Length: 576
Image 1: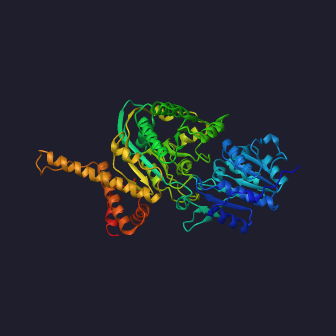
Image 2: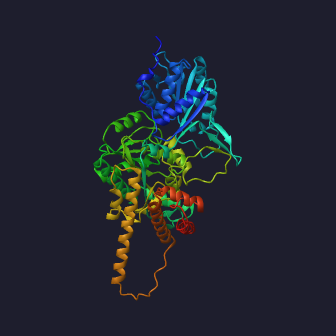
Image 3: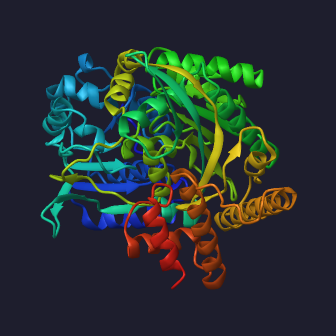
């Protein structure tokens, strides 16, 4: 007996962006449609509604969903079953055809790449809608891209979904349209776009606070030379990479201090209206993940769930964590993209991955909103490149072909290997040995603006930021951060006045010259104070004022800006 057609009246109400995109899709009725929607916006629900519409009116007879991972196959099948669409998540290439009990199947890009002809025959047998989830993965390798193209060219409809429609390479994404811009470069074109800033305005996603931690790091090179550097200070890429890796070393003090702060923040959120709030530590490899789990148990007295790969039982462990009230999950790859754990509200970015694509995917795990006022907090190393990505959360990107590539990050090849086979690589470790690292809160980034002054871990100054209320609107977050910063600066001025009054040194004694790092901190504070004043005068959000200054003056976000760029922005904001 044929499987029953899904009933449209059983579908949950659609969000405004989903309704608009659905109307656009049904109006066009074309073969290909690309929808870009920020993580947490509801791409799955949108795609299943289209599938139901096409099955109901007879436009298609079958549905094939292509997902990045084995775990997401199960997630798609479960979501589809809830709305009456039966998808076979256990389909294997050797099966050749789906059972008549199903509307179709869910497969991975790897499956398609291994046997594209199997999926081409399946697609040609019945009029098929193909849903390509996180379509940018089809550009991961020539095998995957060619396989997807060969398998699904005969499909009568193709729906491409992605939350991160950009890549750092020139591999074209199959079935995605590209248009040539005025600069001669080809850019991906989407038929429907619903970005993070749109979703934040609509209350669909949470505002994200980034708590950036710096600190002193020491390591020994393979030549036996001992080096020391402050994480976040301007230095060469190699030194940044080694200071970064030293900070992430489980044997140092940086990770325990940051995990302690993150757990304190998690406690605040749980006590403030999110009783089941969970935390996720994103590690670079298996060895680090296991070590971080041990640290969490030492810090909190509670065991953390650990998910290392797509092996047997990994999906069940994620599902168990998602449905529990366990505090912490540690993962390498499994929770980097697409996995739905809405209660995740605190993250620790403890990986050396730094491409915009991976960063966006990782942060996407924390943004799904369940009720008004929920916020997310992500703890990360104070590394200029990461700070820039955090400052540009709301920037919408396209996939650009032919653009000269700058090296984005410091360890992406290593992370790529860790993602694929999750074997701890010793390449970087052979070049140096981590000796020690300490942590201090450097700044809080929200809505593109930087707040706060340096605060040692475990001090009342740090607690002021860790203790921000858990249920706040975006406007309340910005207002409270500005007030915290103003209070900090006022306290520092009072202490400085008291020290001067107690000092026996002549009043005319010249002040010790500031280091470049100290000057940057002082200028950043001054810029933030001026932006706050402009906000109070005009009512414009802090982030928009910072963005306007960047447009007028050029340069990166203030977290990455040079002394000269900060001085130029200070002079400019005073003229606005």
